[in-house]
Image (cartoon, rainbow, N blue to C red):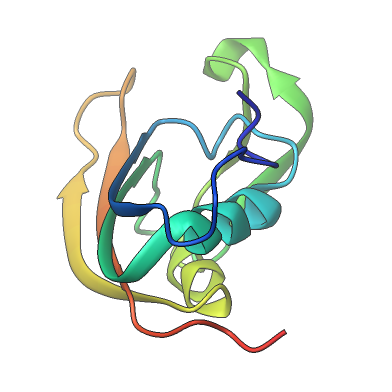
Length: 117
């Protein structure tokens, strides 16, 4: 399944778990739009990504980095703005950046309303 173009109807899910995926995809904003599209209004999404709380911007790599588990990006604090651009509201920020092999940021977001096209 390609996260860029999910084969589900609009508003199909009340809960979405996307764990350690967005840092691997070609176009994370397109994937966030797809997650938004299939999430029901009032639904919840748990989006788990590598996160550097001391970095104000996401670091984008030209190609997947073998030394970083094939990541194409490493998220900074602008991750919240990326989610907000799609219409998500961040309800909880969990900080778990201790282990080098799995530095993560856990985001629980809620779909507040459908965006107008």
